[in-house]
Length: 89
Image 1: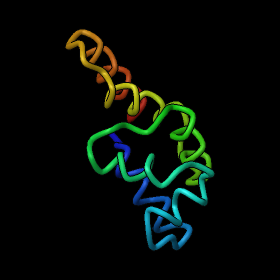
Image 2 (image 1 turned 120 degrees about the horizontal axis):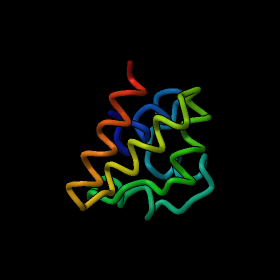
Image 3 (image 1 turned 30 degrees about the horizontal axis):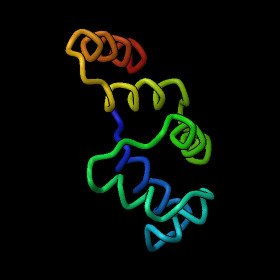
Image 4 (image 1 turned 60 degrees about the horizontal axis):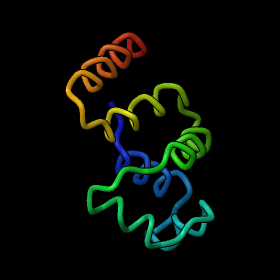
C-alpha cells in the first residue's frame, strides 16, 4: 500500500522539491493543502492521480490506496485491502 505521505515524498524526491511550498506550487495547489497531509489528511483522489502520473505509477493502484486511507467503515476497508492485494500480485 502507498500513502499520501509516500506520494508526497516521492514527488519531492523525483522533482527535487525541497519544501512543501515547492511541492504545492509544482502541483498547483495551496501550501496549506500539502501541510495538512502531515496532519493526517489524505490527498484528494484528483491530486493523487496526478501525482501517480508524475511518478509513473499505476494510477488504479494509487487510487485504491487513497480510498483505503480515507475509508472509515471496516467492511469498506476490508474490501479495498482485498483489491490492493489482487493488484499487487
